[in-house]
Length: 154
Image (cartoon, rainbow, N blue to C red):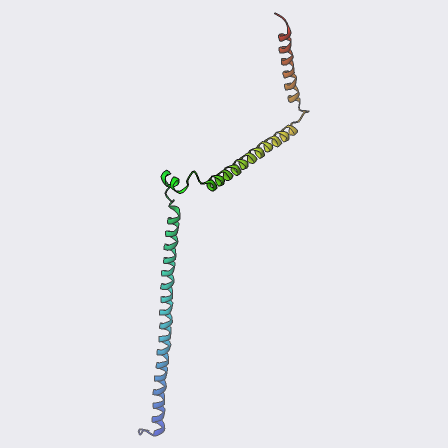
């Protein structure tokens, strides 16, 4: 079998072609894997850059919000709001009146709450407590003594 027959040579040629196809397939698979990996790396870089941009933007917005606007000077306020402006004066009066009403209602509520608390405290006192009875008797005795001394002429 030293001589090559056409069938043997076809088989070798087919094997070579098949091995080349396999190498090509492996190469294309490797390329696809490399492409996929590079796409993932690119996506990661893009995401990181966007996150950095977003963070820097939010930080700059926070610092811009934290810086208070400078207070207007008296001259600026007087230039903006004239004292002879009737509508402005009426609006200011209404605002002041509503604020004063709010304050009065708030103060009234505080007083009502205090009265209610005092009533509750009085109701909680145990009138059958012997210590309380002793204290009341002592107060009454000292008042009676004071009254008698006051009524006695010198």
